[in-house]
Image (cartoon, rainbow over the protein chains, first blue to last red):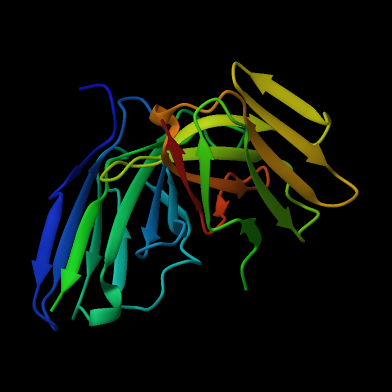
Length: 115
Length: 111
């Protein structure tokens, strides 16, 4: 497909478990973003990559959150020792070039539920 | 602190009517203002965007009005259709491209 894909679409974790969420951006897109969307709220920025470089991680809520994009394509968001407040939809977006006014294309998200 | 404030939280409009959603911001460094449309179970999709060098932008039935001095911008949906029923988010960013979203408006268009 031509769009941003994310997997899994749904993830249920027990409190304290580690989870890994995957994002496949649109081929050739340089920039990749992760957002967290709580129920009934707008997406909130977590982190930003330009190619393999993580240029901004100011939105990560704690050191339990870690993101990587080792080859400048696929990205993984890892959450260690999940807590109930981590329950949200995690959205990935990609855009064509580096910092500039480029449209961000969003994936469908991964809905994480922590019990 | 919410960087972009959006209202109303929900909106019900008759088919053929005009839907209006308003947003306000404080950070004068923002210079890109997109609107996103989100359907249940889907990611947000860009609808229309504006930069502060113009006061209005129109694409089909969708219009953004921008008031730089008041730091406000709004989305107008003309001739609203049931297929427009979705959640709409305003957003703002600087050149660095990190988007700050409003809290969303759930629009319902009644046939």
